Length: 470
Ligand SMILES: Nc1nc2c(ncn2[C@@H]2O[C@H](COP(=O)(O)OP(=O)(O)OP(=O)(O)O)[C@@H](O)[C@H]2O)c(=O)[nH]1
Image (cartoon, rainbow, N blue to C red; front, side, top):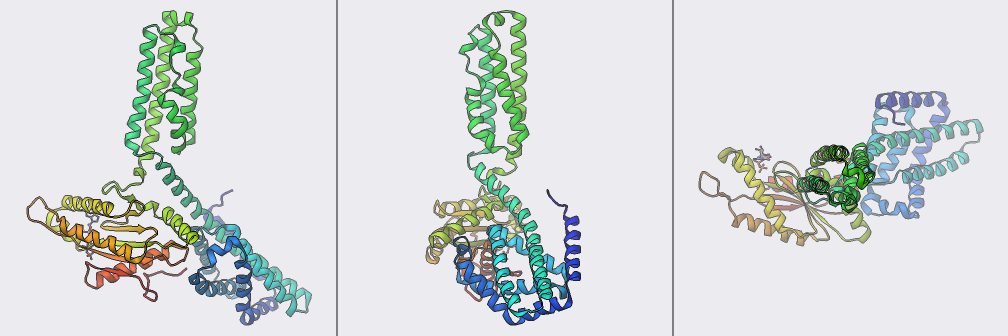
């Protein structure tokens, strides 16, 4: 069951409040002083147990994560266990943010639950050791157990929402790759349906036995639909409707004997019925293709580069590959310098033409295993897979050379050479792709600030773009 967002917020806030209220001050105080003394040990226990866990190691083994997570986890435990003194709405908002980050990185939800359970084990052992009053011990244990469950529950609601969206994008990307071009496929399949109908009418009219006419389900369109079409379209109902029409038309034809076809009125009913069913298939099919075309085949319509909506899907996959194989990749953010002046001087259409030209140069310059996305108006993201910094820079230099050797020739005459600024960032082992984007962005900012027409690489310690809190 999906809970309505506002209803859920009110519910969790009330229950969290109630839990704080039914817990004695003594229990709250004991937990707070235990945290003051033992928080580092609790985090160490968590680490020791999770690093022995094959599922968890993949997410925790990088030095970066170790360095950051110690502080983040200590802060989380402290925030949740001392929530009697906290600003509850802010604390709940933090849990939501953590859930979003987990979904982005792809940390399985069961792993988070397992981690929380291990923190509890370590905490309970210490409570039992330190508190002789059993009622007080029970009170402190009940509070810590339920409050951690609540925090994880809020994380999970945010996680599910983010995860659902990213799964949908991933699915769309996968499916679109089955079709080379939505528009071409649309025309080809509508024509295939029409061809079958024409042949059917011709054959019936010329007296060919019905048994010799290939059923619609086995003709070109039918085969395509069974093997590809039904998987690429999102609307389950409309796909089912087409399937029903396909089998319905074939069954109707099969119900006709040679004698029945020979009767003019019957033949007329046969043709009219089949025609109407085939037309319905065409209408449904056109609608489904139009829906699909909204994804623009995964491409940006102006430049034909990959659409930025697929960045999370691809980055998540490349990060997982890099972590498993230990081979690095490089991200580059590339922005055209002073692009506004192209629009201002030569008009928007000339600007569009320049963007297309540059996109073509980017596409030609990278290796076929690399990725080029249109990231924003005149900004592009490039991923150089299994590449070192120097390999990435070599490709970027070849892009610069091509730009220089291929100046624009705006319709007003003359020629203009465009330059680009580039920010590079090497994959550093951290599973969150947004951190990588922020670092590449801050390197790009540096390239612009240092005079443009240059490449800067993000170095540790350089302030990343704003909001870098994970
Ligand atoms: N023709 C055209 N222009 C676009 C498109 N998308 C963004 N732009 C333009 O790109 C320009 C970007 O301008 P700015 O962000 O000021 O950057 P800039 O002029 O390139 O300067 P720097 O990046 O600071 O070197 C704006 O004028 C946008 O209107 C597009 O699809 N077509």
